[in-house]
Image (cartoon, rainbow, N blue to C red; front, top):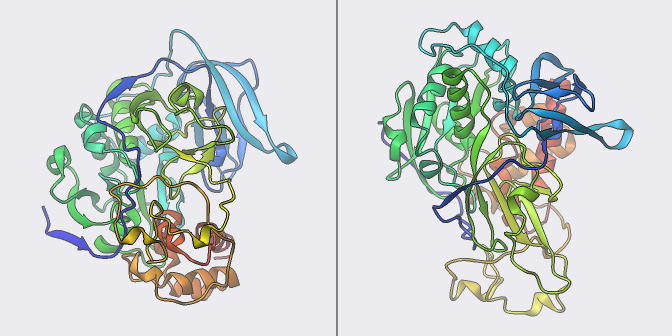
Length: 451
């Protein structure tokens, strides 16, 4: 193993509601859904209609930008609905599962000997290709590209994030098979990053170059790891894959069927007993969170977040777990006005500045809500954000270039190296209340369109 890469910049946000190391296998949900909105830049073209019978692995729709990229059903059953929004935009395709699950049959490849073409074809036909993300831009990888390297993070440093050593404790063989499969897609290396002194089973994984990282969040972000291992320059392409998705790929080549089972962490201060649950991807959220949220006082509400508190997306119980979802977070909804809140000492609130008296006697854990505590203010250069982004990038200048639509400056300031999750911590500490993640995504979309 290489030497430890220690990052000094960053911030760990210690929230209440970490999942205890207990796993419960949940039964089939009443409904499963696949949403094109979970993927950047996907315009779906439907392949099924309501009432069609499907198997696990049957294509539901494909991307208009690349007809090879299919999105398949995680379960067998009957197509229940095609949910649409404004201008008939497809929001999701839902499937009512059958009691007995059936599967599309896929070839069992020898991951050590299969050709690149065979691996690409298998991942495309099974619907697992969208799990491979491209850097720059954080979009689905182009099957025609050959990346300079593939990067995988074996740990997550975000608030209340799942412990992959625990989640994948019984999946060592599938992870190894998935890494071997990914190794056929590039002439470069497969890089696997682990947390120093907590490597667990991943320190012994073969077929990947192991890198050890220490530090505070966002040390677990694969974009930060790429920056310190092999930065992306203009004209270069690297691919990233979530570790649980690697296990799903390994399962596919070993079993010859699409088994979308995954273990997620149900976390947050408003969960009665935070723990891990094994489910099939795409399950309707009421099957996971139903009956597990604490009773609320009259007028109080909660927010369900698919993902972590910094980068996750708001969901209702009638929506669905993303196919690559690893975590659900339930937080108090910050929708109550706090009279003279700016005058209160706020011993129970968290701030990186000394605006709150909580710095005098810091709590071990905080129960935070979703309130921004103020509106948007002037976006000024303060030097604050550089303290929390362990990359050689000036976030304020980059984001202002995005706001101005200046492509040349965006390139010069490092837009090829970052996506939303990499600057989420900057958004959290931002006194200007700027929606930095959305500003960056708008800039990335402009780069895709114009450059």
